[in-house]
Image (cartoon, rainbow, N blue to C red; front, side):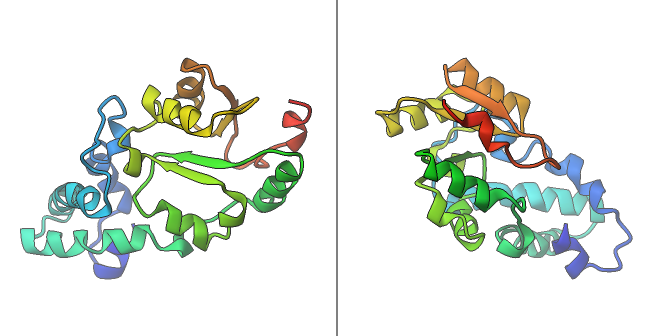
Length: 198
């Protein structure tokens, strides 16, 4: 986590040591639980602050005050568009599919600032809507996450979920009758021909 490296460059603690203490803290780690009370950014991040404080205190063995100071650096670091990227062929793929008549939406388990990140990555011209768990209160693979998308986009002749998580994306989509295609990280985003003629 760059927050820790920047604020405590000589702490001598591996960044990976934080992972076990963050693993159950994000809403998407408990997708069976709705969180419709966390649909604005301040509420969402306020809920996360104690998780970050606990992780920093446990791993760094620092004071509550220092841990809180570090936790307040997480949000700006996480939403920094420079920390995110897209596959080299993403825009070409989206443009080609749009030319074939497809509309694109994002359904993601993410932080409240996802629309800003999408805009900064240059994806906004290709995305019709964003369905973000931090706004809806439902994390994939919760059925309501997918059902909300299906209800909102009607009418449509075909709807597909493309994702890299076999459970959250693929099983979640298929459980509500949505078509799904698994995309693996490290490979080409998508062979556009896979959707030709559908």
